[in-house]
Amino acid sequence: MITRRLFDFPDFGWRNSFEEMERMRRYLDQVLGQSEAGLRIPAAGVFPLVNLTETKENYMLRAELPGVTAQDLDIQTTGRNITISGERKIEPDPNVRYHRREREPGRFSRAMTLPGDIDREKIEASLENGVLTITIPKSEKARPRQITIKS
Image (cartoon, helix red, strand yellow):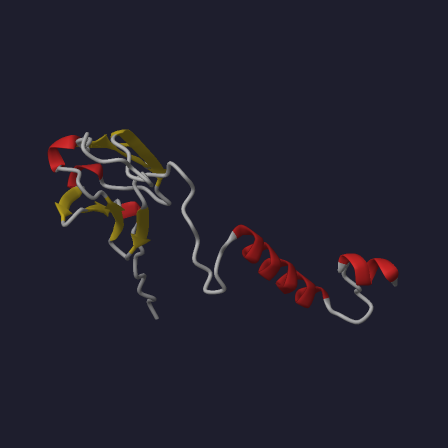
């Protein structure tokens, strides 16, 4: 069909739908500038970048905060939410002309809802080499419990 040859419309008569979806994904990745490895470029203005992981006992939140000191950070919890806020201070250099400036100074705030209940009294945080690590213990009722079977 002429529309198929000119516009590369899918022809479901000879391809299955999964092949078409994969072709469209590759095309969108190419258009958006993403690599085949699946690397994602973070959205502009999202700071700090975080990873939230879970073990049997804790949630672990790691945030990249280069150049931010512990005194410039504020961590608060309410219910199952945790908020990291602070200020990134970067002294401008009047003797240079910027060609690209991606690190901006200013206030930031990042809030997340955790998947389960937490023990707010036992939360610990540390800042080492620009990485903030927050250990958030799960509440006793949220932790998995082994149940023995009586016979």
